[in-house]
Amino acid sequence: MKNFLQRIALRSVVVAGKQRMKRYLGFVREKVNDKKENTGICAQSLVKEENSTLKGSELAFVKQEIEKGNKELSRLLGLKSMDLDNQIRIRISLDTAKSLVANCASYTDVTLLATLILNHADFPVNEFIMNENFAPEIFRDLAILFRGVNKSTSFWLIARAKMLRSDGPVISELFESIADEYITTLNVGIGVITYNRKDHLAKTVEAIKAFTTGDYQLVVADDGSKDDTVEWCEKNKVPHTNCANKGVVRNKNRALYYLNEVKKVDVLILLEDDCRPNKENWQKEWVIAALLWGHINYAHKRIIKKEEAVVSGTGSSTSPYLCKLVTGQCTACSKDAMENIGYLDPRFSGYGAGHVEWTERFIRRGYNGSTEKHWVYPAINTGLISDDAPTFKNPVQLEKNRALKKKIGKESHKREAWLDGVDRSEFLKEIESIVT
Image (tube, rainbow, N blue to C red; front, side, top):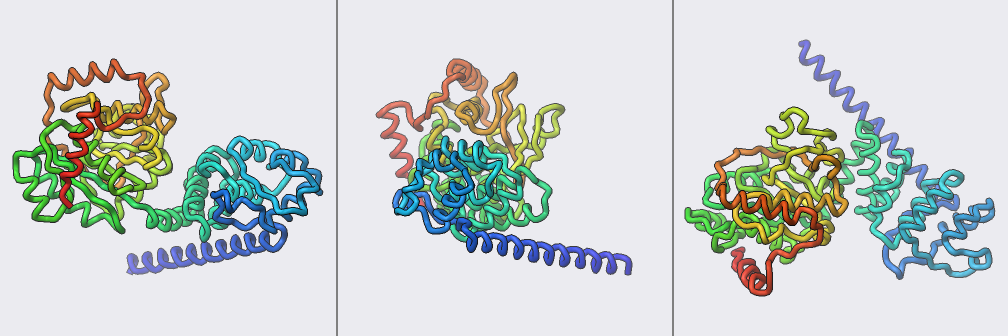
């Protein structure tokens, strides 16, 4: 009887919470609609030059601000009073957006100002969103405003609100639902790296199929296994390479290149064959983390349990751990980050150091992490479990790779997946060998 009454009470709390959420969202929609009707600015899908004309509501907002004496807004937008009776086209640079906020936000409606900026941005809007410190409620209301118009912008806005107020129930609910909506528009790629560990590979691929929701691209990069790995892939119709053994860096690059260049994915997730999903929709946190931070690693339990290994963070996609140690058992990165960083350095051969150098290159180029005093690497562990299979470590190769990493450690330029023209031809033939 006691348990029954507890369940009834819990159900009542949940229902009441949902009703509060519904009422709140209704209030925000009314607020947004009021702004549309009263010289406010409606969200538009404006990122292209042909859509740069000020709409009626935007023009009314600008006129109102000029009448109020907001000279900074007209100066920064390059507008004069005589212009306001004509068709006006504007494109707002990132520097102008920052100046508008710095000079105008204190005495105008911030939501309307930010909407104007986002509608006419000539830069990736996430660069603006992630670096402004509006109140969480501002980002929340903007996310609702853009939700039906631009899912990418809405996602970045609600993610920023979530970062600023991680425990807010309304923001958290919105974050989950808006993220789900956005992720369904993305092309997600999952690569599995393997060598002579067919049993581990089979468990990982089966777990991916069981726990990954929605559409995704899958490829197995096999580094010339001598067991029946290839036969298993063929039998189970899993896209896979059929190449000579050339080491883990080459093999990771095969999967990355196939997903990035052939399948044109938006987010790449790279798993080693002894690290597999154990939770439904496991990829969601990895996709979000890759989008927000550019790259993310696996926070193995032995890392986060080690004394003083975790510097900060909660391990969630919006607040990943920052760890002093890193493992390459799972890595995710966004297409944008890949375009800036490129592939693992092909000068590494065999086992060791290649993944760490790749991760540190992300950090050197401004992605999440730190080089101050001690390297710290962003990581999460949501939805994965590791078997920690025996490695193919070679002490001679490991020492050679460590020496190479020390030599090239300060380089940060983008890497191709090959060493030279000859190696490029061989690499592309390996990609062409992938059986789908």
